[in-house]
Image (cartoon, rainbow, N blue to C red; front, side, top):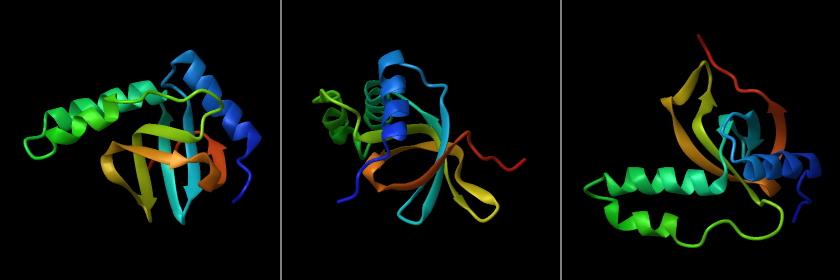
Amino acid sequence: MSQPDELLVDVAAMVESGQSTQMSLTVVTGGAVITGRLAPEAVWRQRVSEVLKDSSHLGEFAGAFTADGPKDGPPTHLHFHVARILQGTVGIPETGGMYRVSIEDVGAWTVGDFSYH
């Protein structure tokens, strides 16, 4: 098991404490490059729950995202919204998605997001 990057944990903790959704970040994890804005876990969970509730096929899963809020202690995951997986010269999905990434699995990161215009 690798040791999480302390600076990245500090950035995630600042997002959590400030309830801000303005911090842009790009990470490399499991061979994928994910770019977007970080959200506090509670905000991320609420948004995912809302999307699932609106789905006729996935509505029953909405409750899983409202149960158990963030845990005490330092953050263990990054919660991206308006995020894309970079593949060649495109970002998937184009409109941005919701991703949860284990801080422990981040191999590289940089402040800011990448976009192709």
